[in-house]
Image (tube, rainbow, N blue to C red; front, side, top):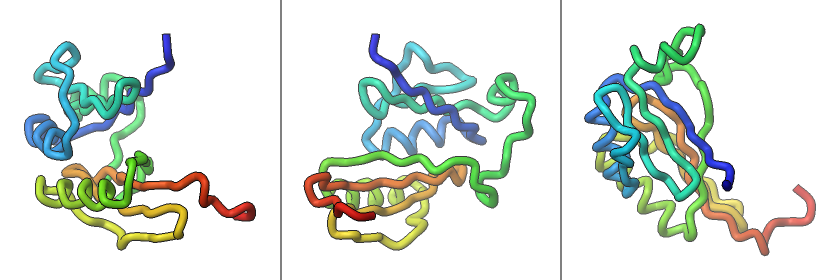
Length: 136
């Protein structure tokens, strides 16, 4: 079995969060979705479990941070082109997210950032590995 990554995020409104991620082009796996949470499919081995806050709290003894004011994690996903990066940001904004940090173009890597409806920080980038400088 290949290793799979399940990123768990607390959300305030599950239906709005599902709509947001579906609006980005990601599907929902109904097998792992109910009124407490939903499984968003990023890739065949990468998933985001969006969990309503009360349910999320059953998995930790820590307080849930306010991700609109506190950084909890930087989530980064790669795409196949600069155009796809721009399209993802456009979709994020159209579905209620925030274009958070201006684009960064390093020549070999192009990166943009959005915040989802609950303030989670997403880095979306394209990287041409053949152009990575020898010294970084």
